[in-house]
Image 1 (cartoon, rainbow, N blue to C red):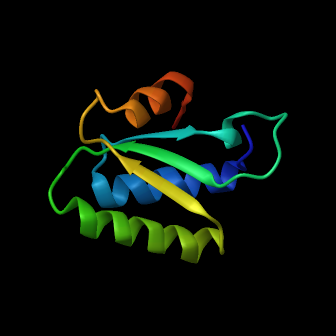
Image 2: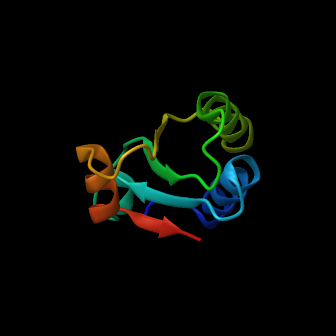
Length: 97
């Protein structure tokens, strides 16, 4: 997994602060694999609280940029487990704890 312990800690803490303590955060995409290079940080989030998701997503991304620096971060929020992107994120993703 190609994120540091510090990055993982910030991502999980920020997600739980914004979306609720029982929120699940998965890292998926190229950053899951140690042998790949580059790539943005792809996060799949299953929020505890689904109220005002658009506002929370913007706040989440903003806080990550402030705390992790200028990086490309893509966020997929859970809406329907039948969506292909959600299936892929759960299949290849790594739960961040």
